[in-house]
Length: 73
Image 1 (tube, rainbow, N blue to C red):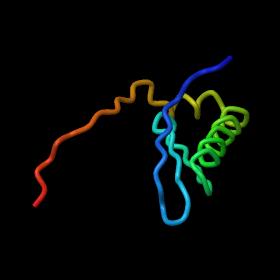
Image 2 (cartoon, rainbow, N blue to C red; image 1 turned 135 degrees about the horizontal axis):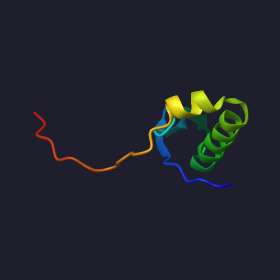
Image 3 (tube, helix red, strand yellow; image 1 turned 30 degrees about the horizontal axis):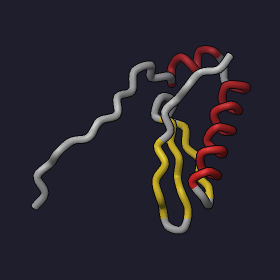
């Protein structure tokens, strides 16, 4: 079974950090592609090893991504 998840990827120092907010699982890599692939592997490993109870307790079914305008300064 395939399921889609959100991946946030941002530069951190010389590399990139990737985060899946639905499960609060993160990874990293030297490139965007590597950070994305490492996150995919981390998610697959999580689903292979976690109990159904752990999956249910960590899974956030609804994640909304939006932008906000904020006064600064």
